[in-house]
Image 1 (cartoon, one colour):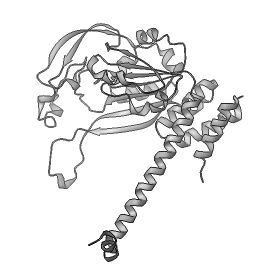
Image 2 (tube, helix red, strand yellow):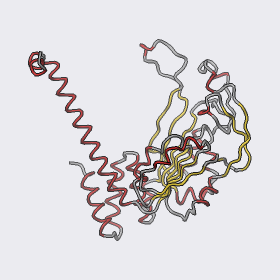
Image 3 (cartoon, one colour):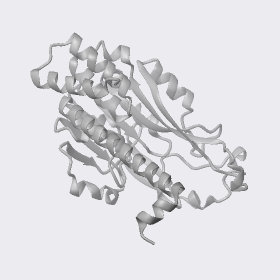
Length: 322
């Protein structure tokens, strides 16, 4: 039976295919529009720094718009040198450099706890508290671990080697429990005055799987009292103890990916370079409404070069509600 004949006799199938084609067309339009926005904002970005801490296997996806800018300096920080293979085929306009060394709060010699599956390795010792013992039945991910002495540097040393010149910067940290302590290796005035975006992984457990992990409430308080707002939170469950899958059980929260951005009000007190950089941060996390508001503010309150003026108007036209 020919396909057209089959469709004519099966109305349900015809409706399903029509819906699927509509969905494909919708996704395609959204992709094209997203890509156009990325290209416009990349042209608007001034000099910025993108710091990718824990940069194994691929560059941080959320920072794509910054990689698309020739004014961006990208730093990939990863002690496992073999996991930075992708830098050999870097295709982005952003200038890239790498640091093949671990980071710590104070720098210097540190003990690395290399877990049985090395993706869980950390400067913090793995520990399964009694409260979590029924949730972690398979200990093979963590144990046995071995202790290895390594050299580390601080985030401030990274910034010094990058010749950081007080430009806006974005940073992502994924280091198995030490993210917040590594960030605090930067002087507080650098975080407060030049950071526009911080994404980090953080435990949500009462008894963290890595000893000495910072509680999330401390992280939240730190950023909110320094002019940042929490704009995205991706909770990750521990997915145990395992029960009948048909029950669609919920589980205890294990950790989260959290994104803090410089607040809208603080951004509007900064100079034009910070405001244009924040457009990139908003677009990175699909905060189109925030980007629209800021683009309007920039046009109304700053003297803009003709090229940037055109790009901003083009961006506003795409973002404006139809």
